[in-house]
Length: 198
Image (tube, rainbow, N blue to C red; front, side, top):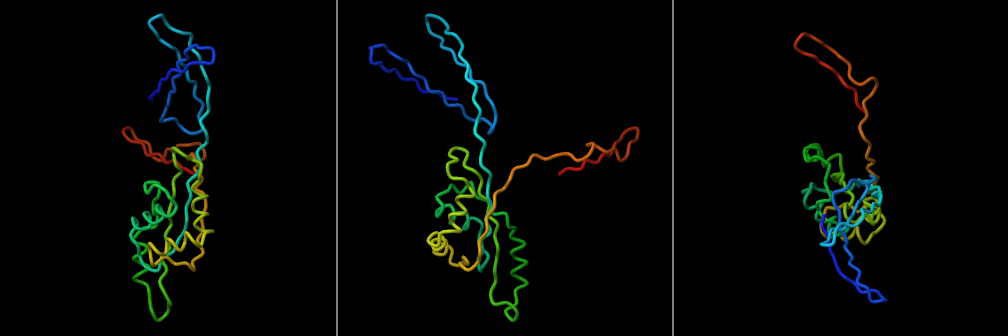
């Protein structure tokens, strides 16, 4: 928390002291009760309360994009960051390099025309400015030939013929199935239990 205090003079000549408080680290979609009071050399003011509810944060998004060669994750993230004007730390490549290497080793020039490496890239919501949702950012890439051309300029192996897809990542709290814990084995010193989640 930090604050900024300033004094203003009203139209009738009285002095107003304004303090702006900035609270950080709040959880999304939660209710909070804020209480404030003034402590001066003359004494304490009444306590005033205000109930607020933080906004629901947007969901993350995933895009499937294709390259004709194996690319470094950092190269892909930097290109998307530059073109979509995002911070790189909001992006993550989910496709494992071992899967891509397996695809590469199974390539046969006698059977296949070219190699295709599909990458799944995740974009997290912006914690500080949620005005452009992650799904909107990826949809803009899919719908804009200009943005796709810019990706191709930064990463020449980008496959312009591949039909990119995107979808939201819906956050769901884990749930325990059934009655919860099932005791599988119980002795005088040990217990083995199982839990089913979904």
